[in-house]
Amino acid sequence: MLVQLQDEFLGCYSVKPVDARHGDGEFFQTDTDFPALARSWGWRGKIGRERCDHRKTDGTVDCPDCGVRAWQFIDAAGTYLDGQVGRVRRI
Ligand SMILES: [Zn+2]
Image 1: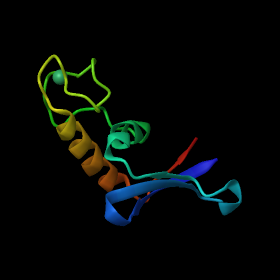
Image 2 (image 1 turned 90 degrees about the horizontal axis):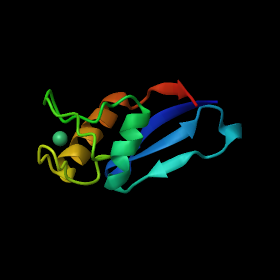
Image 3 (image 1 turned 90 degrees about the vertical axis):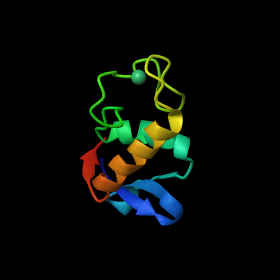
Image 4 (image 1 turned 30 degrees about the vertical axis):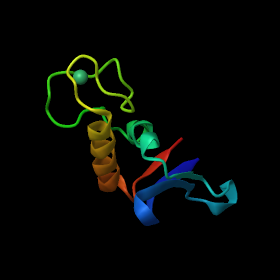
């Protein structure tokens, strides 16, 4: 099934089937959902070109290795998602 990433009001996102017969899709409004959502669209879990690969965090808690804060991951994930809006992928 093909799904498309769409931006919604108030900084939310949705992932909707391209063919509406497949349902309404999923709505993402909690910012702690953004890291996982961004990963599903190809984000590598980094906020920039830092060396740490943050293996001990999923992006919703601070990285214990380098100290990058959860809000920085969430912010980076949101920025990544903004750049992916409109993309279609197969799930
Ligand atoms: Zn780290």
